Amino acid sequence: MSQVMVTINGRNYQIACDDGQEAHLTRLAAYIDKRVGELVAAVGQVGDARLLVMSSLLIADELSDAYSDRDTLKGSDGTAAARLEAEESLGTGIEAIAQRIEDVAARLEQS
Image (cartoon, rainbow, N blue to C red; front, side, top):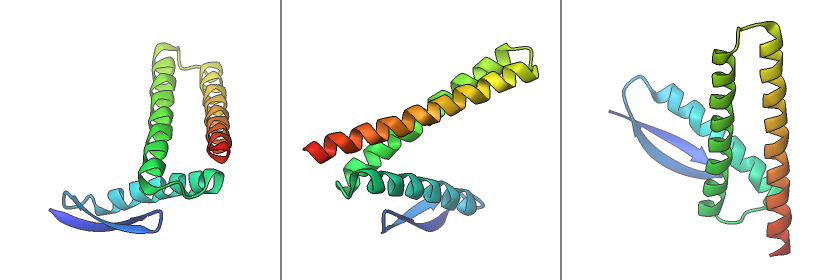
């Protein structure tokens, strides 16, 4: 078992992982830190727990969309048109996520 120090929202966390998974865990933490940073830019510092819940929900939404796109491609004939449709769907999903972040920011500013 290895230990990796990751930083999310300016806080350090010591995380255990399997040997050889250190770089992968570091990349995952960097992605989460990036998403938390985007939320902080949108809504401000609203507390670590709230930011981590919000970013977790956004990442889960991205994962759900990716699974849906994958299933669409698996069910298609693999043509360029099907791939283009999946890419357009992904772009629409990203725009929807950005809008949700802006909506959350607006609601938090009103609080």
